[in-house]
Length: 470
Image (cartoon, rainbow, N blue to C red; front, top):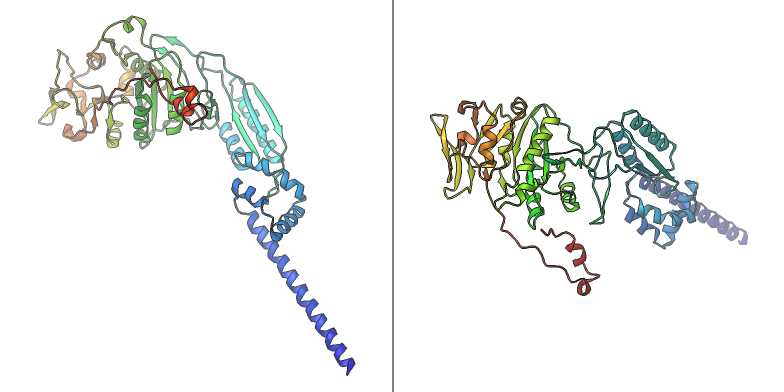
């Protein structure tokens, strides 16, 4: 009897051991599958840090087990939490940057100072990334530009992915070939196009990081557009550039030439242009001193002439247009004007007491002009009411805009001679539609100075830096 009981107890014990073994083995297999699945997923750095803070038994066991399978330890996982939090890009993004740098994207230069040495900072622990970085360096060297490169390498190990490394590769390169600033009657050229190869220059006045932008590379179709926008320092400047910029963002194959009447560039303007994301060049064209002392100043003339100089030096195809930053535009207008053969015109709303400035069309042909102020002008049109072919401009090297208030448009169009009415194309459905308006933002006084003592340590300190004071 006792023998039977003992045999039964032994059999029960063996069964329990077997089931426990199966349970443990199944659990381990499940954990391996789960960890493998998690290692193939993209994990946000915030989520990784949060995961490290868990103190449950299962989480600790999982972290310990996965650290062992990755040739690491719990100490490595904890030590690398801060590394994960400060990582700004993965190895894939660094390789992408290297690739784009190798293809010769546009480099950043600045006027009024000697070019800074280019620096390349890399956080890497992968031989593949090192080889890619070396390849990028050699390609940039053979590109023919004069560059100086300083590389700092910091090894880090991250054990929260299937890969054991997470790296950052940020490159800023300054090229000195063909980018020396030149002063002329139109002002000083400042190349300030952000590109994927020339990235992340911090804006000192704002404490922000300049975003990388793709360089403008015109393609034949659709024909490229060059939008020349004069601007000057005033409280409304950033608001009006923002409004125009987000309109232009809907237009393809376009380069925005933002030209400021100033002697130095503005970090606030840089910040707005980078944020909008339209391919741009930020240039300077201060008004000549002899015109600044006059009661009625020819605003925007030096800016537009600087834009014409840029087009003559850099463009061969396409169409250019003077788009003031205080106007409102229908996006369809840009798609119509880009096919201009010589000169095209259309109505502009909210101009003078007539409410519109427009070509007069009779029997499908240009028959005159309707405007609230003719003033003896041959072409009484608004600045926003015409576009010109780049080829047509290049055939007229003497075409320029005069410093004569009220006669800027007329003087420029006259300088495009020979130009007959038959050469002028009538857009906006034969000038029966209004697709742009000469809106004007209410003039605002400059903001008063912020009381630093009263508002120190508040958000108003940061906001005050974003205000434009004339």
